[in-house]
Length: 87
Image (cartoon, rainbow, N blue to C red; front, side, top):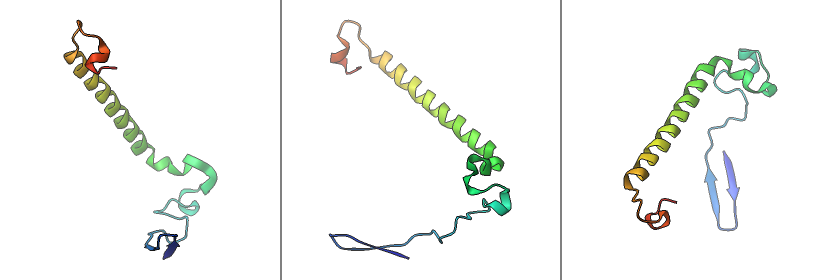
């Protein structure tokens, strides 16, 4: 339990952290890698991490394409772009 003080008042903050770095079996004893070994600790999760990054890239590309189609659909060549709110 941590307690924070400020000039405005007293705030009680509950945290779930128990003070150890061993979280969900990702410590040195279960993985064989120390905490400073970086991403080597996450070798067993690499498929999930790659899938999450590919899905995120797909969402970004989808959003960019959708916005492009939206702007092209509303574009009027006779009017300047700054009057159409496109730039």
